[in-house]
Image 1 (cartoon, helix red, strand yellow):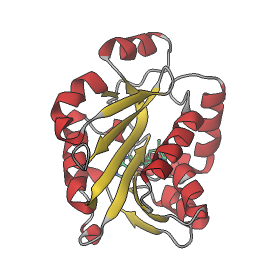
Image 2 (cartoon, rainbow, N blue to C red; image 1 turned 90 degrees about the vertical axis):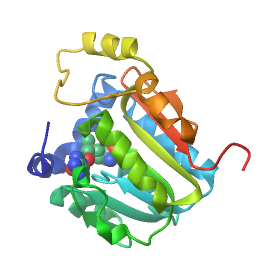
Image 3 (spheres, rainbow, N blue to C red; image 1 turned 180 degrees about the vertical axis):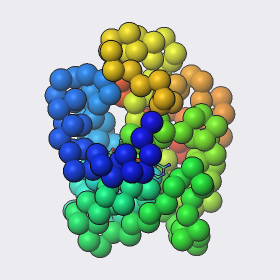
Image 4 (cartoon, rainbow, N blue to C red; image 1 turned 180 degrees about the horizontal axis):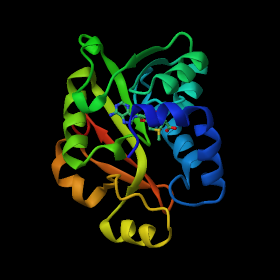
Length: 211
Ligand SMILES: C[S@@+](CC[C@H](N)C(=O)[O-])C[C@H]1O[C@@H](n2cnc3c(N)ncnc32)[C@H](O)[C@@H]1O
């Protein structure tokens, strides 16, 4: 598993590596572009414009939204990743912080319509993912939406199939398995969308159905 220095070193070639893995339709990034475009669509359907991006990296998705006038706040522990995001989105707010230590105190008092995260939460085990999700709730508008797009699977059998399809499998990462995390998130009407044999999107809604 990479630390902040590892991501610093990867930053300059990250976008190219991801694109190539997606084009080969291989683990780990098969479906990357489709996932981003699907998240973009879900965000626009929601209607909110204040976005918090966890593990923003080089900012592929946030940049698309930024160009359409969305307000972007990004968090990442890699200085080099953040430097690229800042260059692409000069009016965005970017915070260097390690999310395993909780959400940065700078966010206190802020309100967001959507919290999004792409390809970052596999660096957290299930307890860490749940802790982060719960910490996000007070920062969101009552009609807020959390969207987590990542290497993720509907069930354990799909994860096992993906693991068997590759020699590159990273045992140090912790991929979301919807059927396993779902029972812990029932208050937020969890929904999962499969994007490719390696990727999926978890959606969590704050407002109860019909409100
Ligand atoms: C694989 S990249 C994904 C970047 C971008 N969101 C995307 O979808 O292309 C993972 C990002 O999460 C960040 N990250 C990983 N662990 C983190 C942590 N504990 N705290 C803050 N950022 C973290 C990395 O620095 C990196 O920028």
